Amino acid sequence: MAATQELIVDVNRIRKAAQSGIPLTITTYTLPHEIEVYVEQVLETFLKEVGQERLKDYLGYCVRELAVNAKKANTKRVYFMERGLDLQSTDDYKIGMENFKTDTLENIAHYLQLQKEKGLYIKMIFQSKGSTIILEIRNNVAVTKTELIRIHDKLARSRQYESLEEALTQVLDDSEGAGLGLVILVLMLKKVGLDEDCFDIVSADTETIARISIPLAQTRIENLSQLSKAIVDQVTALPQFPENIVSIQKLINDPKSEMADIARQISMDPAMTADLLKIVNSAQFMLPKKVDSISEAVKLVGIRGIKNLLYSYGTQKILGDETNDKKNLWDHSYRTAFYAYNLAKNFRKDRNLMDDVYVGGILHDMGKIIFSNVHPDLIGKIRAFCSEKDIPAATFEDLSAGMNHAEIGALIAEKWNFPENLVNAIRLHHDPSVAAAEFKDIVETVYLANMLCEFAGGNLTFDQIDRKVLSNFGISSEKQVETLITRFDQGFKAENLRSH
Image (cartoon, rainbow, N blue to C red):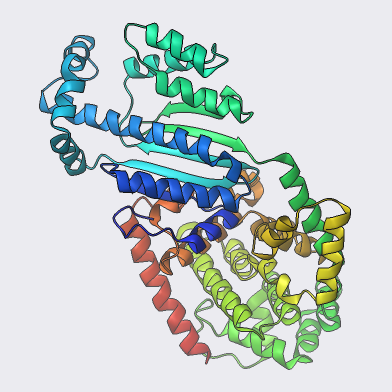
């Protein structure tokens, strides 16, 4: 969400980001008034989507204060550079700060232009991550040791005040008159029941990050969790897998059965046979000639491949694709699967992972179409459940709009006895940072594939993709992402032509 675009608040994009745990990023170089107003509107909409609208005035102040501080820090850099002063030098710092405020206020347009030319940004990031809302203000200059000491001193002093009146008296008596903004910020957070640990300022090599972490209301988390479980328990319209698929699963798990038995059982289902042959003849297997024999296809795919086919084929058969919404979802899922497979092939070179991420990509959003299968009678039961447990109607609406879809999908996958790696790929495809080490590869690959698809569709920006995951795949620039997507898209189109 770049600040250079027309400043219209895109409610649908904010809603999608809030529901999916995708960070919303606004970048500016000069922080003009219209951007401040826009940031306030985006924050208000975002907080409304995560059920925390009551915090908008308090957090609006905090974001504004931190953004202005970041802007001042950037101005200080260009001012010192222009005067040939070293920020790290105690003597130079003292000389520079004597006239910094007066000089920059008198000629602010000049210094803001310098900031833009030097690429010094202010980046505001809002994200709903698991049970926490994270607000970050970043600027791409490292804070000096002197500045960090001053900041932490201001924060330490702010903790001693119980009221704004007390702070105003004490701080304004101070000869420097400094730090009032941060004092008010800490008092604002206290006022909404947040302790000082919720706010921190850290300095990385190339960035200074001011971060506010707000735990979501515990009642809201419990409501979402209760309701998600109730829906999965009540969805009797989603049976266990069809009998023929269960038969093949039993054959695969029977050490006495042979490939020929598995091939024979598959051939009894013409649709599954066609699906298996389509997979074997895809670019994934790079065969010199087309395979028409189901027994040869079973040998080529192997036991793991057959198992994965059962999960994806069985899920699609049960959930169906008869509506436009479902068709669009499956289109996105197959594209994600193709991207995930190619990410694993190019960056991990692990055959088992390639197979697993492909089916993980197909199934990652299965929680989103649960509501397409919900019968009106069930909606009545769920509303009664909400009433009985005093769960607000808005929580049910959040779920039906896609909130918690990863958890609902994972609960359904557990109900269907999917393996743990697939359950984790579904549950954590928006939150890879919490994946256990054994599931990290599949979760990160499915996450990145999904994000690349969203980026390709213009639904998010490069800044919204997790930097750590990108780094784990050796990706450091937007250009690399665009090159990958171009290659993957060409392959995906060729794959579709080949299969029709």
